Length: 89
Length: 382
Image (cartoon, rainbow over all chains, first blue to last red; front, top):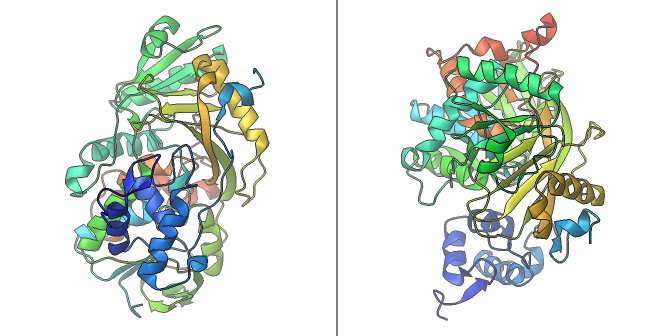
């Protein structure tokens, strides 16, 4: 696979190559990878990349995907305007 | 995991990682950092990412002023392969009441005495700096251009990498379960991965510092308090400084990435370890932010989270050796501004532990002040 051209996190333009590089440097969970390169911090909040990164971690550590620690799922589910929360719209 | 160390640091946030680096660069070998989860998983990684020198107490202001100088050269000093994203867009502290304005004047006098270049400005001048600022009812503002923002994850990552190169060991996903002591001196740290014998322990656990102190038989005057924050979608740069309105309990800044980070303090927040996000916060912060900065009503929120302040009785840090367990040092009680004062707090602590001359008197941060009732009450906390 062309790891340099394969985008894993579409919101933040993070490639598979960058994810693999961080895993090889010892970053062990989705949370750690997210904090260093912002994968999963964009508007979709990791809906696309979360499981893809989980797969890579599972492969690297030889564990089932289900055993990879998930980051906290945070509100809101979809981006919402501040004006809406303020009650103006 | 190794069985013996010269220093064990508990907590892998800004304080733990920077102290590890400052000790290692001064020649200390065999340092181990214990972290319950991953680095910056606690308060550091959940903070508002602001760096300001506009404090009302000399102690906070000196630590922040000197830490800004460190942030300015941090990428080079720590030879970081990424960027700590230090942006000096300033802090604009806006005041909508006369009482608050009088307090700001006192704070600025403290800042000027320390050479911090804060300016007192009119509402119109404030609006020139932040065009979308609501100046209805604004009494005045203070502005310091050299305040700003840094990326907490990258700052911790930079210290971690620099400390690792100097031989410091980091044990993540490891929990401290006990502190051993003999004859009033600390002798070992017990963890879920085994015990480490050590003559020096640095308790840099933020809100959990009290829990660790209890293991050593000491009751630390510190309590946890939840603070919530949110981040928006990124947009083109349109707000240089962090805007703080103590009257609205609000802080709000655009990061170099383009997103806005903001939060409000809740005066009714209980003293508790609760770290869940709430719906009420979203409504509260949205109302305050769109009142002070109306343009922001069009920005979409992508994520909310919360973290815990480690509140000390006077909102100034506690840097001291525990009388009941010699060799155990506390570096906690930063009360919501540990990230911005971290770099120089680490220097101060390293100098003290190694018996070197310190750049400011550490005694002012001692536990004694609570017994004597001589608090360093900080008036400028959001």
